[in-house]
Image 1 (cartoon, one colour):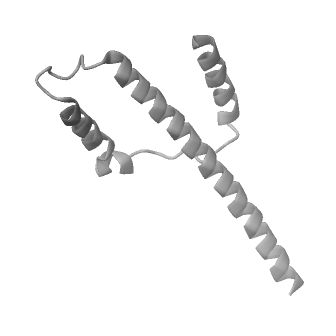
Image 2 (cartoon, helix red, strand yellow):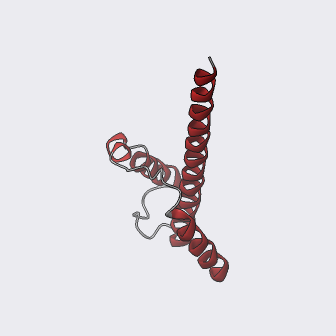
Length: 98
């Protein structure tokens, strides 16, 4: 009984670490999404023909974002140890850009 309890505690710790890693990845993706939206907004409508209205351009962007094949080919980075330095560098870059 005691060994089963220890096993469950280890599993809980593993799941909590996985949850934290996924949460970190989600936050990175949100930051990347905001950066991409900012780039799109700063460019205005340069890439799209002027004949397209804003809703049509938004729909075109959604088609690319919702492309299941490209989403499925995206590799998730679940390791948090190698990203700590990258995140610090990105934060420093963002602060210097502001």
